[in-house]
Amino acid sequence: MQHFVIIGGGQCGARAAFALRDQGFDGSITLVGDERHLPYERPPLSKQHMLAPNGAEPPFIAGQQQYEERGIVVIAGDAATAIDRERRGVELASGRRIPYDRLLIATGAAPRRLPAAEGLDHVFYLRTHDDAAGLAARLAAGGHLAIIGAGFIGLELAAAARQRGLEVTVIEALPRILMRGVPEEIAAKVQALHQGNGVRIVCGAGIERLSGDSDGVVLALSTGEILKAGTLVVGIGAQPRAELAVKAGLTVENGIAVDASLQTSDPAIFAAGDCCSFPYEARRIRLEAWRNAQDQGAHAAAGMLGAVSPYEAVPWFWSDQYDCTLQIAGLADGAVTSVRREIEPGTFILFHLGEDGRLLAASAFGPGNRIAKDIRLAEMLIAKRAKPDAAALLQVSVNLKSLLPRA
Ligand SMILES: Cc1cc2nc3c(=O)[nH]c(=O)nc-3n(C[C@H](O)[C@H](O)[C@H](O)COP(=O)(O)OP(=O)(O)OC[C@H]3O[C@@H](n4cnc5c(N)ncnc54)[C@H](O)[C@@H]3O)c2cc1C
Image (cartoon, rainbow, N blue to C red; front, top):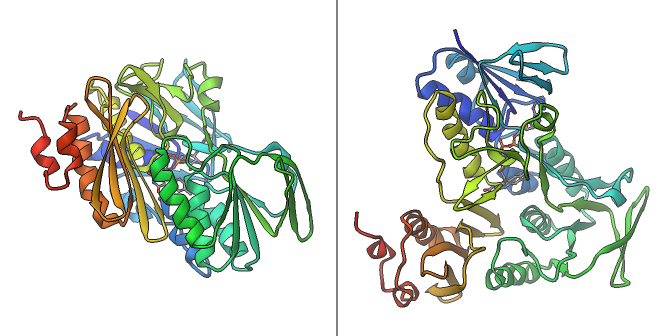
């Protein structure tokens, strides 16, 4: 019998385990996770969970019974500490050793730490259900919440905290919010929505000094301002959890480097989800996105079973803030021009075109049911490498479906 092992009991690991069964694998599957919970979804942690007055249960991907029914052994609360590539085994913190024929590393990412905040009380990071439970309990006490970092998690948290009546200040070192990956026009809309809801956003401000006492933290900003807050959340991005791969001598390049089939530099080992970097259109990228973790989990499962096919899904990401949704399909970094289509007054979608006229990405922010369909169609255009007429893109009367290249 073959033994397949998955390290990382998150979105990608759980998806891969079920996908292995769906694709007919009848050997043993062991899913090892260092968190004490069964695998759960992370997106609600910074959204609905922050609004639940008494915290919430982890949003489990599947119940214990479903794992048992599919013959998936889940080891929770035990970390993989080493991969013995020569003898093909995974060593766990508990001292157990699990042999493997094929291994998937799906260890995700961890919040980037702020050295100045180390050792201070009242400082929170948000990655896990336990982080979220601690923070949600703290929000119940009200007061002033300071958030360092105007990325997705910081802003989602700001929205939730405002809805719970806290005073919220978001501090961003860069000149504007959502600088990484979100076009300026869209970021401006997001910022206006937050400000309309009473969030104070301070951009271009570094942290000169941080100190704390029993009441909270004091932030000295590079602008000269001194801020006091009862709670501080640090949301300055995440780093791939590649330490096991480094220790095992696998190639690591902004995450565990995999080829187009999600195979690492060792043919018996695959990596997928937030922890890996993979080839996408002549460059290597790493994504931190729910759907990528899902899709790569299934793709890696196929690879472990011997399929050799390139992972070519169009990147897609969403973020919910208040009653609006931000969605981005594709990657706009190679775009030379953007075309704006007004879906309705105040709601627009931006199409980002490359030098050769190819549609590379689309982004929008607005009520979810208004933008989702157009982003979905844009995603299909991107996948088909379409070069739609810019004039047609901007006219809302032109159905995007009609711009899909004929097969
Ligand atoms: C608060 C929050 C909100 C989010 N919201 C959105 C959103 O709105 N839209 C979106 O597209 N994406 C969102 N994401 C991103 C999305 O959740 C991630 O992309 C996804 O969870 C990645 O899945 P993964 O399985 O690769 O990693 P993870 O879900 O992080 O799972 C990895 C697991 O492996 C475990 N692990 C690590 N090392 C070891 C080890 N040595 N041994 C055993 N276990 C180990 C980790 O503890 C973790 O449980 C959000 C993420 C967070 C944190």
